[in-house]
Image 1 (cartoon, helix red, strand yellow):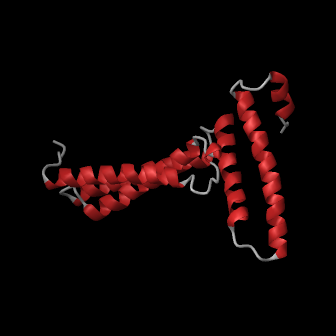
Image 2 (cartoon, helix red, strand yellow):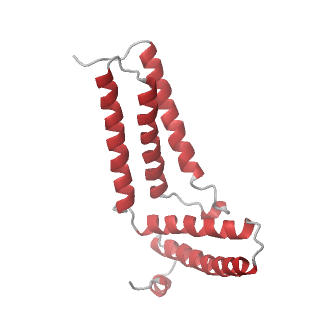
Image 3 (cartoon, one colour):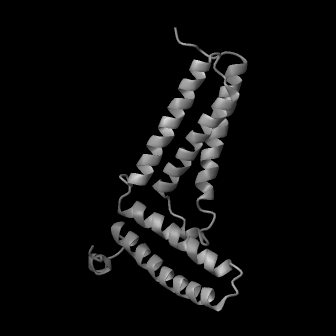
Length: 170
């Protein structure tokens, strides 16, 4: 018969579950820390997958440290399962198989806006670095505007003619 946790072990498992949930939510939110404008923060499935990957890997580490199962074998199974899940989530993230048009645009907007924030707020002194950042900001702001227009077109908020004009072939 499988082991059912009791007493102290149940409390440890509950704490671990709560910590994993808080960790996943925190990691997801921290993914938007470098987005300078709340209007640019779109739901990004890649951030969700990354946060879950890191949270599940954290479960493996914490479980290995707490060892709430009475046997080493039971603890090893849970750690191995968590590591396999983390590897699977990481593979899913790296494959981008779940990333469609809107998700790709949301990911790129977040990434581009992070570069803008760094360029605008860093204490730059070298004229070459300043000039490079000026160019990066100008290009990325234009790219973000184009991506936002594409999202609007995909959502049906822009006329079809505008959508066709925004598409660039691959």
